[in-house]
Length: 128
Image (cartoon, rainbow, N blue to C red; front, side, top):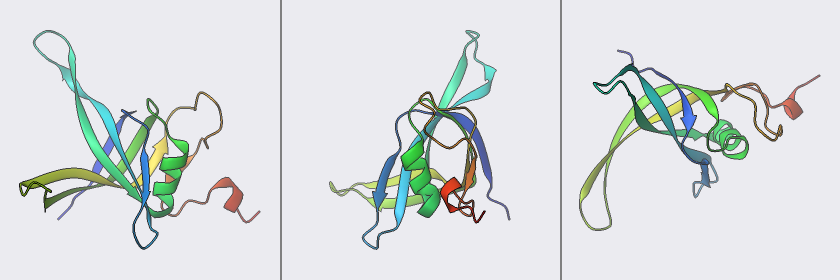
C-alpha cells in the first residue's frame, strides 16, 4: 500500500508554529494549489490544502516561510477524527510533510534557499 502526496503551491497564510506539551515543534500551514484544468468559464480553480510539519522541519517552516511563498511539499495524507468542544464529531484531512522545498526566494532574503527535510542540516549545522 502507498500513501504519498506531492504538492506545489503557495502558502495562504504565515505558518503557525506551536510546541506540544513535550516540547516537540509542529508547524501548521495551508497551500493554495491550482487544479490542472480550467472550469467552464475558462478559469482555474484552486484547492486549499492543510499541511503540518513536525520537529526540525516544523521549526524551519515556522521560522522561514511566510504567506505567498512557493513551496513543494512531499508527505502523506492523514485523516483523523475528533470531538469538538460543542460535542460534534469532526473529521480533518491534512498532509503530514516529510519534506518542504522552498521554490522561490524570500522578498527580504533572510530565509534559506535550500530544500528542507527532517534530516537536512541548516547552514549553521554543517560540519565543514
